[in-house]
Length: 125
Image (cartoon, rainbow, N blue to C red; front, side, top):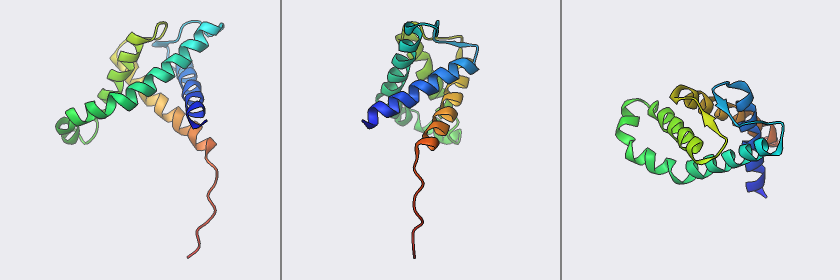
């Protein structure tokens, strides 16, 4: 069940990000194909982030360390560009749009996940 909720949150985040950035397109969102493209995009990004991203982080560890972690933004943008090549209907107009997409997507996902969290009771001493 947790996987379905996470996919739903990611899909909503992808849809919101598509509305915010004009250099990113999921196609026509007025029909089922646009929504299915959003679901497929969220699923492909989740797979790439879970399978390929850790390998890329290990391979680029020296440059990531020297850039104080900023190279992770390049890795995220590259994964977005790769997802745009895999998912039909999902287009990104360049590296800067891919970078913006990954940044906005992270922020929107963080906000949506924060809404989902239940408040923790205070811990006693």
